[in-house]
Image 1 (cartoon, rainbow, N blue to C red):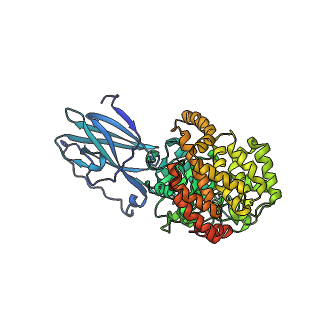
Image 2: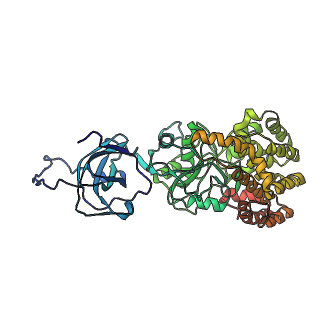
Image 3: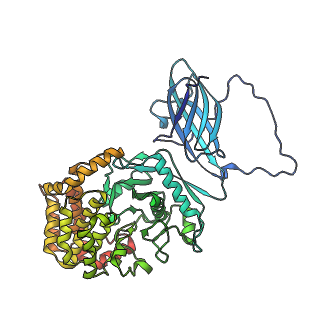
Length: 547
């Protein structure tokens, strides 16, 4: 066999389940009868199919002759039981199946290894013809550990390699499996990647800003979806890093890229929502605490059982942005508002906690925003959102100046969008005319929005090129700002804001995305006006939506 005929590959998108064909055997070999009996007194062997596993069909493309084919897959190891079936592929791709032609396909050896499986095949034909290979992998139970195979998707604007996804998935298991405190239950669940990281369809936007976009994202297959930014989670919100239905028949959640040593915590927090876990705030180190931290790795007995059971069929309501009905530390925020904003609240700043702060607290945050933004850039989305929830008019001019500034960077741009969304809350609390006029101007004037987005467009082009991701345009970034301002109007609780939303549906100078968002925003505006600001956020915190 030529040493050149060694091919290494990773699973590809579009896998199908294992069909019923038997593994190939040498056609000229006469089978010898052999009977193996267990020694006296030895029990029946344990069935390996009691383990965990998966099936997969791989298209190895046209080929002939002998080949060693190396399939890389992190879920496969030396103890894996791998069964392989090969055959001639029908036209139309793996889902079209195989057929029995005149060519002879022979499978010689199957060798599982750490991180993959190798096979030796021979295709006896005079020209290259399609080779499809079915793999059935069964992993024996390991100390009772449950293995969850997860499909990982990314938007083209997001850089995420297979190796990075594997690291985060391993960290998810590490978070659950340890017993780090007396209150922590060791939960034997591990996560492995189901095939390569896939690109989300072009119909899914890089930034999720509306319920319609959320529905599109959730409908794009199942698994973990990594996007550029999330500004809708049960409602508009400006500082969201993850969102998921609480109770889901399958793994289906959204996250953004985050600090490397906490991405596993973020992913397993959102997976916990899929499994039916809500927020818990009686322990600030809980995985399901509403904010994230490097030491948030504690799981109680109820949560452990749900992680072991996996996703739970439920209503599909999400753990809403800007809302948390929790008690404990969340209901009693720290006395120093600067400690409150110096943490990332996964589904957004909880309104009930942030709105307890007063004008003096707003002044402390304004010192950070105006005098030393570089030192607190990571938490700018939390700073501006909390300023808006406090509702003091002293923050209006500094917030507008911040949005109009030439500062750039992903955290800064996220904060500018957060300011536009939650200036509506400030208007609701203070009646600020200046803030309302600013929101109407950004939402309705495409050129104004593009001007505000231009600093970020220049920086993002450089960052995306370095990371190998899609480059966002100034038009796309301007549209994000304009949509954020549109939802700011929906939270303002003012008749004039509702009238402006009506005009935005067909405004000649507005983005098409604004016209679409205005339909959702108008409905939300009616809800906010009917219920009032506090009741709107209370209902959203308890039910995932106030509609």
